[in-house]
Length: 536
Ligand code: TEU
Ligand code: CA
Image (cartoon, rainbow, N blue to C red; front, side, top):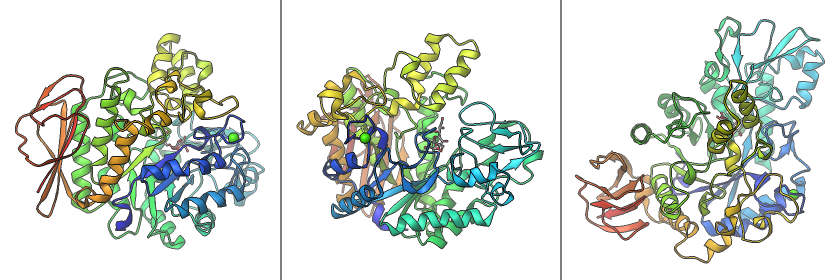
């Protein structure tokens, strides 16, 4: 295992909403360049930037039509090279986002496939009698091409045809893409929905259902990942695979300590504890009991196996965590700090998603016209078709839409939150007047400065980076706690996930308070209190 990222934190940039440098309302590469000093001030070592390659933007860049070129909407190759070099000079490495499960339907490979070229049809998955699978974004996962008499598989949007990884030529093409960006000085990679790439054999004989559920952790998945890593020589770089509905056993292998696969994985089980009966488009308060169960299973299981985890609450696909498991009102600041504490002291590499570090909230859109995300628009239609009222459907989107995490970064209290001088491509929540980076930079008690402290502590205390982890009982379902141990040292992390005072019993620890959001004691936890105590 590569030690260099154990004590590091990663910052995630969703380029379209980060910073617009030219007034067209769309964030861009030069906007990122202008904010590198801000990112440096957080103390992070890596930046994961979401795709900015040529794309018709049906899924905001997760539909790539040319893997080796920059989408003119975001800048030029020269801008990109400068961005990499400038970050490098600050000691920050870029992780680029490789979308290898599918391409855009406007990729030249797919255009050739559609024209009936057998060589390129074999780059994708065409079937005459496909099973009745649904896509992640709603509707069928297959689209018929009448001129070919066959349908192609798209686990996501019809504009995102799935690649056929069983074809060695496809694997070679994708390795070349990795080598290309590695050659540009990129320090790591994030691989989009990587555990969906190996499709099951005898597809046509499979039953109806959710397409992705039949494709996860497929028959050749470990072989394909090992081949990709070995042949591109990225085994000693920081790599993270996004894993859809995976298992602990699989992730132990994906991030095994020999380094033959990846540095770490994203998994999403902890972000489904507010899905009623497993369904995303439902409303339910988080099940804290389940949250604790999942974290203890994964933290302890990965630790026992020596495998490594990516730690996160937020990304561009998730609603804002303070709105979701915290409190947007009276305890906004306390709950944002508590949630951050809970993640940042765990065993793994924490990821901070742009705006999370200032406590940005959900979008609070009030009409369907404000939504831009393909999945949100599809599911709004599906809900309405199923008789859900407009008000109820909007309420569900208000809580679950990916657009909640895609509103522009709130830089200042000025025009358009300092994001753009033009008209933003997506609405900006009114609360930017008080929730913004500039105001928090100058406030020592801010969420922003608390995050800076969390990043620093991980670098300063080996127990945070390397210690063992074990969940502990607090005698109270609302207070989640774990301890870390290294050598003779012990670190206890206690987090109150509710808005009341909560009593803690059975936790015996004496030592110094490393960080917290009140000056309390661990016997009685205040609303959304977080407390970290170091013993020894
Ligand atoms: O997301 C994959 C994924 O399965 C989810 O996070 C998904 O967006 C969510 O479950 C929908 O409810 C990745 C990217 O992060 C996402 O932005 C892309 O849309 C998707 O892959 C397709 O490339
Ligand atoms: Ca722009």
